[in-house]
Structures are given as structure tokens and as C-alpha cells.
Length: 408
Image 1: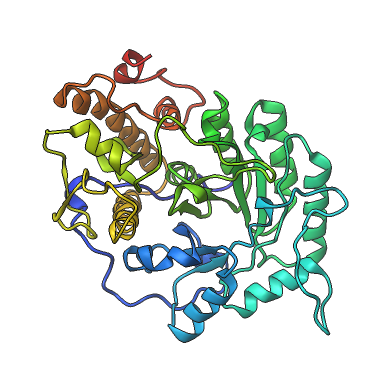
Image 2: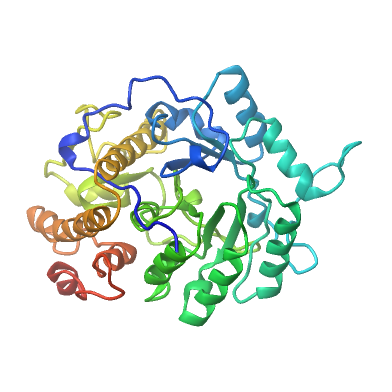
């Protein structure tokens, strides 16, 4: 079992603190350089929106998209970016893993290499990635053959400085048997394992025990990391993940199985950016926040990006500079939460901090809804409810907070 104890979020009074002014650390050369960090996963096209808020001393970047390799090389070698930097090939977005071809990446062969897996890894290394990540296809529910084939091929590389990407359907966390199977396969890999969960909307909300089973995987798989996620990035760190990555946009906060179209709430047209509401620990469309508050005074944000100049109801359009300002706000708040986590002693104290922070956020829903005289204005996400339903060190705990219970 791995060391369970790792990083998490922070009080609003600290949101004025900007990213550390100290210079970026030397470029890390192994998993040690990633240990305990929460990276920001972002498309190369939107990197400029968030880079200024990413704390190089504690965080780093995972670049996605068709231009990720080129952008990573420019960052590392032209701009001198020294913090952890990963490249996600994201093959799982377009192709599923099979027993015959667990790494279905399309890379042009060279004079010296013609194996797609090794070519992808070499390309990432050449671009300055801290560690290369396998171009694994999407691992569908209960497809043990594909997962076994991927693990076997990585073992053949005999390279502990390769991150094995495990983009698995969240159905693997549905029950004890499938969770144990996943753990058994992942434990065979000696190096770091980057788990990414697939499913529509919020994958961890699909099954009642998904959160507790995720914790089990993190605790029992040495070197387990959780990428392309949201609140679970903090929860996983609290329970011992090697490192995590929080998606800068909704697209990078979960994986949609290849061939499927991402589901959205059709009753709410997306005409504004998603905004992280710090007190509620959840994302809401900026337009939704503005409508809920109406004529009431919305909270002014004092994160290092907003600096007290913007209220949470200001992000009402996808035009102009608002999308970039929204992304900067979101990452600034995440970095402050992360500083709060790293200020708490690893182990039970960090787990307790996460538990308390989630419970406090749930209580805020009733307080804020009451203050704007709309009992159901803001509803907590199921994942937040589930993180708050289990106390540190136990498989099960107080069912829910009184506030969460009253909403049912």
C-alpha cells in the first residue's frame, strides 16, 4: 500500500496571495519532480489564459490538443519553462484500446523507430516532457483483455520513467470485483500510473461507491495518479495520489468515450464561461450566477486574478476578454486551495481537512440560497456530496450533512 498522505484547498482569506514569486524549480527528471503536485491540464490553444496563475513551485502543466508537442517544445526550450511539463497524447478520445492494439496512436515512422508506442514516447521526450505518457486507447468497461495487453506492453519497455496512461471507463469503479481487477492490473506496472475516468458529465456521480473505490485504488496502487479530473484531484491527493491534474476547462475534467458526443444540460445554453464558485466548491455558468443573484450583490472575488475588481456575476459572455479572465480566476482559486492543502501535515490531517472543507461547502448552499431568497438556486454536485459523506480513515461515515439531506 502506498503512503496515503498527500496535498489540498484553502480559506477565502488567502485568495489574495499571488503565485510564489520565487523562480521556477530546476526541470525535474523523474517522478520525484511530480510527487505531490496538482498540475493544470489545458489545451495548447488556451495555455495563455492560465499560465500566469499556475504556481511553478507547486504545480505544472499537462498540455493537450493537436499542437501540444510543438507548444511543449517551445515552452521548454524557447521560453525556459522549468516546472513539471507533461504531454497527453489523448488517443483515448478517438480510439478504444483492444487486445491486439492497446496503443492505437497514429505516428509517422522514422528511419530509426517504427513502433507507434516508442515513437510517441520519444516525441514527448524530445519536446521536453518531464516524463512521457503512453498513448493508450480508451479502456472500456470490463475489457480486461485490452487492459492486460496495455500493461504487458509497458512491462516490456522495462522503463520506470514512463507514465502508463490508464483512461478507464468509470464502470471499473462500480463494484468491489471490478475495482479489485483494476487494482491488480495497475499494480503490475512499476512506474507511475495516470488514471483518467471516462463517462458523461461527472463520471464519479454515476455509481454510489465510485468515490470510495477510487480512494481504494489510490491507496493500494503505488505511484497512482489521477488526471483529467475536477474536485477528485484534491480528494485523490488527500488519500495519497502521487500527483493529480485538474482540467482547466470542462472538456479536460473527464473523458468521453470515443464515438460518443459529450452530453450537456440542454435546458441551459452555454453562452458564458464556467466559473468556480469558491464557497460552493463547484462550477456554474457565469450567466447562471448572474441570473441567480439578479439584483442582489454577488460576492466580489479576491483571488490573485480578480484582485477584488470582479464579482462572480461578471462572467456573463464568451466574448471579448471574459473567457480568459474566467479561466485565470478558476486556476487562481485552485492554486490557493492547493496551497492550503500543502500547508497541512500529510496523512490524516490532510484527509480531515478535505472532509471538513467539503462539509463546509455543502453547508454554504443553504446559506447562500437563503440569502438570495431562492431555496433551490444552487444545487451541490453529487461528487461533492460523496466526498463529504466519508470521514477520513473509514470506508463509510455519517451519511451526509444536514444541508445535503434537506436537499433530497
